[in-house]
Amino acid sequence: MPALALLSAAFVVAFEQLVQWKYGPAGIVGLILLTVGIKAKSPAVSSAGAVVLALLMTGPAR
Image (cartoon, rainbow, N blue to C red):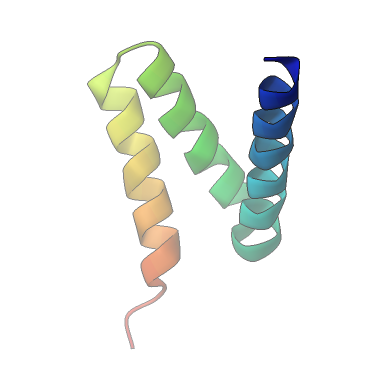
């Protein structure tokens, strides 16, 4: 069980670093909002985080 917890923690840290590298501080804010909203069972907060991430992933309209 500790190996699984260590592996999942390493995955989370690697994913956060990937989001920050690709999308910058706004990506981290969106990821934090999404995570906090899911853990707190707050649809408004998790939706705000999902919208931020979706806007960052789609990029500017050209």
